Length: 418
Image 1 (cartoon, rainbow, N blue to C red):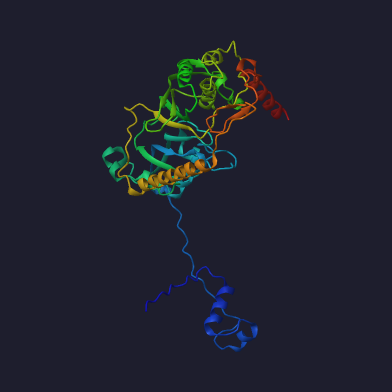
Image 2: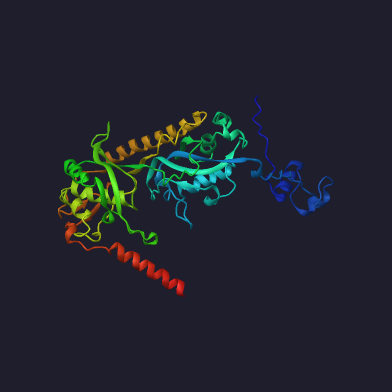
């Protein structure tokens, strides 16, 4: 007969619970009278719990430091964007998780980003994902100052990718590293291009018209009518250069397309605003030339009121750096654990997608709206339903960039006076 007895861990039991257990084992009643009459137990019994060893303080002064650049992927729908916020947020940010993981594995000694010279390539908003996002920071090294002078010693360095991935959520994965970026490297200002992709369902959309409209984005243009103006930054130059803007089919994904957009830099919400306008063109609600008109700041000195496209389909696909200066590697070894995490996520979401197909078969039925309302595509599969579509030229306008900046500056000066 097998013995299925499993030892009980009493270390977390309270004194009261331990006394009750002793009474149970001794066969005595758990009351004051039985305690005083029992020679083996009395009410002065002392329970000594095992003392926890005091954790030693990690001494960073014993280690040298080095600046590294990391390239990583994340799925954005569980996060309040990339950048660490100065106030509590509804969801954690990606950088919050990276800083916590770096601190946990003793790569940095503080959660303050300025203490490790932290820089990021490009901010992404809530819900937006990235595949080749880049950050740089100063971290602990296993090498001495003398050893750091010789690149051959990098083989003995901390496996930064493995260390971080073991402490990060599965939907944030470090995958490449540059152990020797230039001394003054900055992930934001040294980036040569940023490549975004926006995925959408092309059903009932005029892709040809959409592509024609997208072509007007190419070159240097003023994008003040394709962004949200952040008055706190007091931006006055809204010119940005676009080197790629085209709609391409996604291989092996029936009727799904991607808006490929590449440029040197982008404004706040610029990509989602661009897609929002392109989708109205794809529905034949606007002419492709509306893009040209909105880029003409004399014709449109401020942005018409329109909704930008949904956040989930947007991904910062790639960030470019000078290959002569930034040498990316996958680190000393790629572990099975990293692959297993991504495979596990893929399997989970793929099965959920199949289940949603089942649900769609059972619940969605052909429907014709007798009111003939128009549903404006926003890339989220739901859209915005309106009785009548109003052309951009007839819509109300937001305040101009100059007005928004001046208003913010005025409020700021009033606070200073008070």
